[in-house]
Image (cartoon, rainbow, N blue to C red):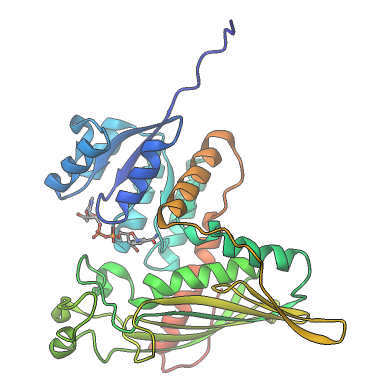
Length: 362
Ligand SMILES: NC(=O)c1ccc[n+]([C@@H]2O[C@H](COP(=O)([O-])OP(=O)(O)OC[C@H]3O[C@@H](n4cnc5c(N)ncnc54)[C@H](O)[C@@H]3O)[C@@H](O)[C@H]2O)c1
């Protein structure tokens, strides 16, 4: 018999137990060596329902997240609140000695993101961003081609995250004061961070942007038949459309289009990116590879591509977070990647506010 004491479980708390937290709770609940130690949400009834579903003691559920941190003293915290709370929640958790995984986007802006990184360093804790599409087999395919040199030097990334009519009719997604922006920071962030990651995370140096609001604040538009009608058009202060052009230190460029309300041909969300390099190109969504072979331009596709279900993303990202904090394995989505993504988004918004002039990223 071994005398080695059993490894204690990693005690994880969740702040903000709304829509996406369901996926975090489901993943954490079934992970070996993890105990769901506490919850915090201003909606007590909803929080108690989740506590019962995921076997969290109601005595460890608080409507005030500071009280929860003080009482529960979790080893780690998953932050699933609206964007405006990501920085204060994460910083409080880091100051309380917990490691943190925060949902995307990292924060409302790069200033907040930097303050979060400072808090992690000050407290010697780990900070991870919930960029789940890094775990998608399609992303792994793109990264593998790039690493093997099949794309050559990547010069251009084309990114889009477009909804025909997809303004969320729940939460606070139309509130700039609580979210930091609209489709660019909410859905564009997913496609942008994937593309940037697949390019090898180059340093962004400048951007040009435009934003426009022509539908989200219209009562008439909110009544058109769509998946999520009757959104809160009266409090809508974010953009409907954002277009950005981002330059990197290595001379590469990303062009991004992001919209909650784009008059284009697809009814459902289209999210994708494409890379164009000196030797080849690749398209994420279809896993197509474009290159020259023996004097011919070839389009290739893997004969088999594994598929990841929605919940698989959360199993993967929370699994990576737990092994990162427990076993010191590398994080797939470190905080400095989140900061660069935030700097790109900030710069697109800043340029749009300044009439579309190029702005620099420090
Ligand atoms: N990774 C993804 O694919 C994905 C998908 C959806 C949402 N998200 C992100 O997750 C975050 C939450 O989005 P959601 O759709 O779950 O929103 P939601 O509105 O469903 O949930 C937010 C929860 O936070 C709670 N909350 C609000 N203020 C609080 C406070 N002061 N203290 C504690 N709890 C508080 C709300 O009561 C609610 O339960 C957002 O940042 C969003 O961008 C990520």
